[in-house]
Length: 121
Image 1 (cartoon, helix red, strand yellow):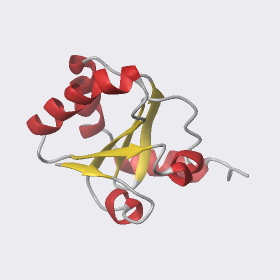
Image 2 (cartoon, rainbow, N blue to C red; image 1 turned 180 degrees about the horizontal axis):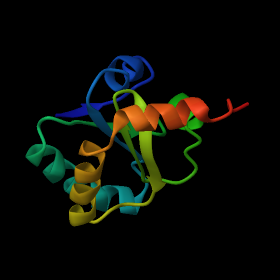
Image 3 (cartoon, rainbow, N blue to C red; image 1 turned 90 degrees about the horizontal axis):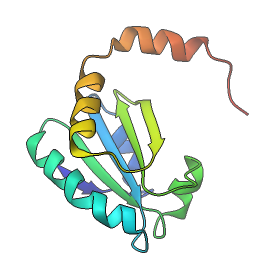
């Protein structure tokens, strides 16, 4: 499922159970335009995952909240926890591999690790 993410629907989309993959992009960005078909193909093959796109020009608050300084930036969220965030477009095989890794994460262990981290200021 491919969705346009906004500050209005962000929380309801990413805080639920399951995997959400987010592409932070901009219309003026050549690498973003080249990555878009890859993102769409992978989303079509993985209907159990929510794939969302954030237009950083239309949603500057979201871009700022996640400190997006380079587009495209790809983020993977599982069960409401950000488990991957990296600037740059991924090749199709690498994106599929990333999804496989996110699917197999031990979320109980991830939550323990996150809780043990000091709060960010």
